[in-house]
Image (cartoon, rainbow, N blue to C red; front, side):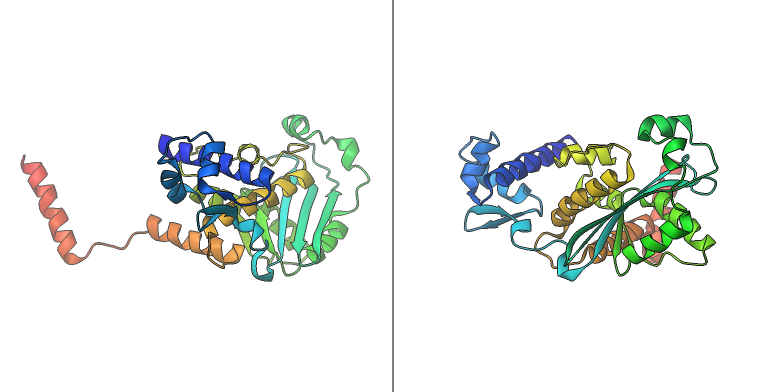
Length: 283
């Protein structure tokens, strides 16, 4: 685990150096910039660079300089919700923030949502949102109609998607509508990229990838940071593969399912397992 963390920090340092330089660097120069001065450091570092880096003829650049994001014309909308409390079944949305990235560039969506439920004091302290701020906001049916058009044709990117997806699906259901967008959870991506890190919250990832948050736990700013983090995670995992973000997420989900539901042992394997158990009991 400690080794994985070291590699993560080395990749972070290398990314920051290249981003500030704005152009490819010789591998030896990059290793010196991140504090690796051994003559063998370049050869050691190259296979440990993650998918964000492209090494060609000894020169290291960023794949983001070579390929567009979102990939293959995919439309992406990063979404974040704030709610009266932490229960998607019983609580209400109080703020929606979303960022759409497509061939036309970036568009943003933000709206407060009125609620008759009290905002939990912890939520008020965390978000800075109080009852006066949501009073007089457009009715949720009006806001969701606009949001539905904003989401059209997009892959939805959410950090810790279970809560937001459940809450948004419930509200769409009240209007007789369905949330049809495929959903990518950046927590799943982060688990694959950062297996040595226990904390994969949005604040942790924003610091790791040097993507500062202006207003913690406010919907629009969290959506902006989610989109920025998703880009880092996408290139880290995709590398040279030409995949959409949805395809990449689907691949990871299938791998996770196969690991959590292994194939049953064959009859021969079962027999060997039984013999080992009997042998242990006899000892």
